[in-house]
Image (cartoon, rainbow, N blue to C red; front, top):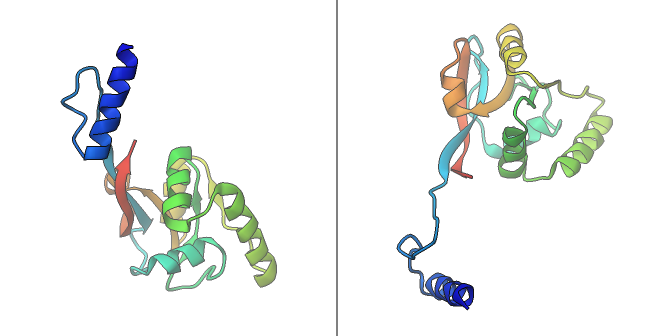
Length: 158
């Protein structure tokens, strides 16, 4: 009976637009705001581009375009990879994989490298001029030899 009353009170607050933080027994936490950024080695001359351009680069459509850079898929953090796919590429991992393979098959280009270790990714970006990848902004700004090209997405992460 107590649970029904509490549920109906929460439901009424949601319908009425009232904040839940004042209700007894509710736990509301603010989601952390994060930034996903496009990164490259500090010696590169890659400029900012549209999100469509970034998406096309990572889908293999503009692979190796000097202006957009050569993509490197960052799989050092599975959550980061999922956020990148959902918020920048707008696809699930399975659908992304299918589209990437189809685009590369048509163009004859090679698959972008996938790097699962952040240290290896940083080393790759420093050594291969014109390569781009993605990282969390706070992490990218704390690493020497890495340049933030642009912010790809900013929003709450739980």
